[in-house]
Image 1: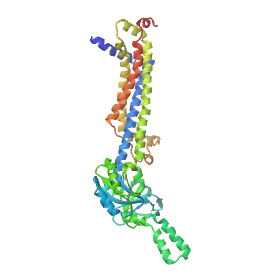
Image 2: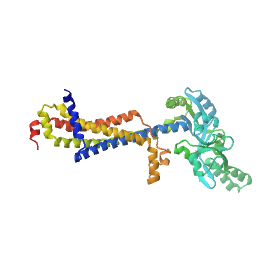
Image 3: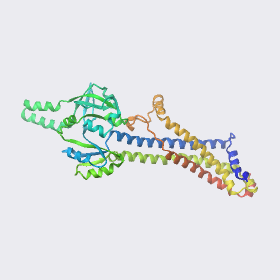
Length: 430
């Protein structure tokens, strides 16, 4: 009885044993095909998952959980901030002024964005103090803290002075120019105009590195009063930022905040602000899974092709086995086991190679960049200095099980075909 149970596996192992034939080469190619499919799937899904989750972490570390903004300017914001801070789930509220400016340093000019903030309130809303790489988050007086990529582009260091020009007063400047034309340029009007166009000089007190290229290359923080002056807002602001106990509970808090305010003032969550980006990443992840699964399907066709060839070559042997009393299920298992063994070996090799590539992904990226001058993950496009990756055991299990099932199903067709052979016709086969 034991021999009857084990002989299908014994024959499957004999058929798979390398014999330096064309059939062995096809079998090896099938194994490599399964391995490549599983390897690429594990790597791509891990990178896409890591990209999604790392992006969420970067967004939640740099941005607030809820934003309260107006189409233009948020006036009389202090009572609203007090109301919002009393809302259940809210930890802190901070005002901000944000907009484009022109920054100059030693002849270099760029057009980043300023964010005017109350330093004490801002550090309760965001984690900026944790991402400082030089200096401190100090916005006392006329000072600024900027991203590391922006600092590199300008060539500034802690202690240097930046010149900042704001477009916020452009309308007022044009009005004054019209007055100059009409009044013939009296000294009082010219003095007012000169005061408007005079730039602000800010001392760099700190440089931060969030890890997201967009933030590190486009933002500089200034004291709230400086932002208000640059945009001639008086005591008004552009909006409020809110930190919550639970970032993923932002939609519920958003509804509560919206009940306290009237349009055009509205509350938006961090999910709303980045909805298109996160949706695109998840959709791309799912699409890539199905596309790359076709690599495994192609390898499965290779397994099927191998087993069909084996079936044709072993027709007489199949006839002899059936004549000796081998059952249909035993014949099926002879060939099904071959496909399952190929699928298992390909899965195991693909799992090892995939995990190795995930582990050494950034070293491989750097090698391609330095040796072959190939940039596969440019920071200015993907907003990360390194390739993020996160291996989810459930995803790996789905990939490996799916590949194994596909290979087994591919083997089932020729196995069933072999088992249904008429032993008389099989014995007569040449």
